[in-house]
Image 1 (cartoon, rainbow over the protein chains, first blue to last red):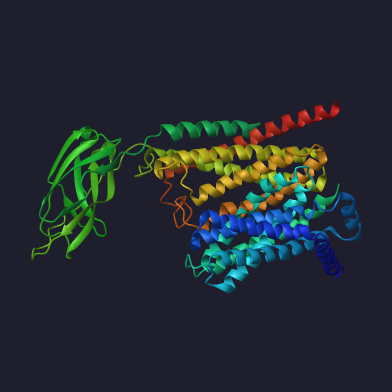
Image 2 (image 1 turned 90 degrees about the horizontal axis):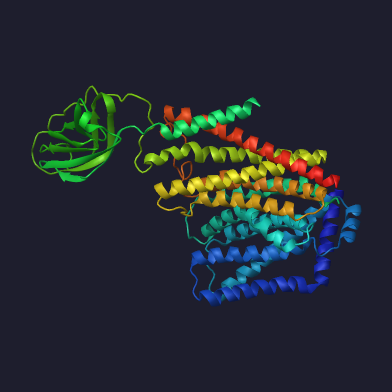
Length: 219
Length: 345
């Protein structure tokens, strides 16, 4: 119970910090909008298949930019202070939860922006919403942990991309296939298999994060 | 010590046996594919590794694919060791039903080469007409070839030998990566720098094997699929797997402090291995692929490996694993000595 309480307190702290430095979240949202805009200027006309791929590529880059600052924005002394107050599991879980919400917001914004510039290509809204949630969760787990590793090094932005992209590819490939289903580019009635694979990857990565993070933060 | 010798002996055996054992004599292709009933069907049969002119008992049949019904050749004339000219006087009726029926070509070239089958070689179109079904010319007393050979497969041809090197490389890579992850786990629980050095060495040799696996795969793909890189899902995921470990080395190199380097790279190694498993074993099975073992294609099934191939393939796998372990062993010893010398200064 203490853990759950800690997670929510830390989550509130993250949200307050974000609200105080509005430029960070504003920057990410503007990043998404301008990327979508640039992509449409370059493509002019976009069919469903391209829409699908573009959506996830924009999501991927926006996610990595949103999550990379998770551990860099707090200096090591303040982090040490947090670690004396709360269990490392509570800290990483609160960060993952916060990033999931943030990425969920970014994915909705990307979807709205892309639909605004062409049209709504999604045929199965329920499935697509589920995919957005699972995608945000998967990206959040993988990238938050990678950000925690990268923050330990000096050139963290480069490391983040080098480590993050290969690790996230299994999630990304499953997401693209699933969302092709929601856009009715392919008709696969057995898409529950893909969803369970995505869930399984998320659960495995989350378990590993919880086990491994206590080894990571100690210096 | 003994396992190093065993590794070298098995590797030599795999290279010598894998490269020197010839492919079995077989019918490679013919220059006919379609005809009607009641006509004379003339064709040239091209053999691979065959000795048609030395054959003591050269016989040719056309056999219906689904039943035992067969027709004997009326004229057989060897042109050279790899070429025979064959003619069939097709009867008016070879099937109860009108339309095309596939026939396989069976060539028996005596005791030296044995018999071989070219499946679905000719499609014979049954024309209408009230004619009796011609009598079947029975296929009997087929000769078995003598000697040890690898099977001849169309498309694969000589590239079938890649199996003894390409597949063991990946098996060995998976083993080395597994050992590397185990050493990373041991490092995190013991904080002994030696295990981190071992984990890095095993991963490094694993990556080398992965790159060699990609190269041998690309060469094999050039022959069978027509291009070095066909953006096949298996090729892509294998390349990403190599990328993951490249990132592992970048992570290692980006820390100056040895304990910090060991701890953080161990954490990343375990995390990366967890995403390697779905990448190599789950994702390729979901997508369409040309690679055996994916998208419904068989791999290592009874149709793909005959007993002669097994005799070379399994020792090849063991040899590659032993050699990989030996290379990693040498590498971590060198790195460990270097590290100790560094800390003395």
